[in-house]
Amino acid sequence: MAQHNPFNPTLADGIRRHGFRKWYERELLSSHAHMALALLASVALIASFEAFQGGSWNEKLLNTGFVLACAVIALWALRRYLYLLMHAEEMANQANCGQCKAYGLLLVPDDARNDARRLVPVCCKRCGFRWDMQDG
Image (cartoon, rainbow, N blue to C red; front, side, top):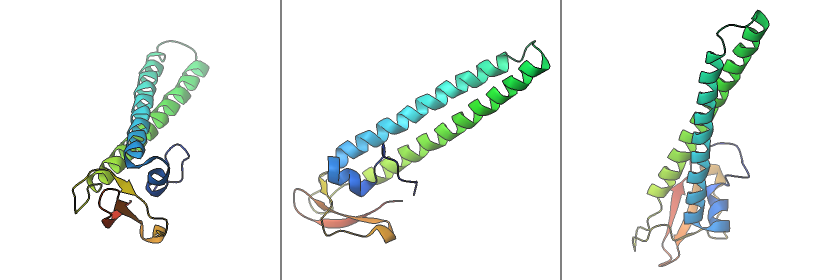
C-alpha cells in the first residue's frame, strides 16, 4: 500500500470522514489530476526535444536536464494515476452489501482495527451486514 497522503486518505479514514461514495469520488479526482499532470509533462517533454535544434553545448546540456526531468515527472504521474484509478475500482467492486445488495452505503465500525491484515471491516448502513474489504 502507498504511503499516507493527506490528499488521499486511507479507505477506513475516508469512509469514517466522508462516506464511501465521497472517498471514491475524491480518489478518482486525484487520479485524473495525475493524468493531467502526466499529459502536461509529456507536452513539456516534446517541447524540450524540440529545443535541441541549434544552441550551444551548454544549452543542449540544460535541455537534456529538462528532458530527463519531464520524463521522470511524466512517468511518476502516469504510475500514480494508474495506481489510484485501479485502487478506487478495486474498492468499488467490493462495496456491494452481500445481503441487501446496496452499493456504497458503508460504515466502518468503531471497534474495527484490522490494519495489520489489510482488511477493512465495514457494515452496511441499510441492513447492518458486516464484511471485510481487502485494501491493497
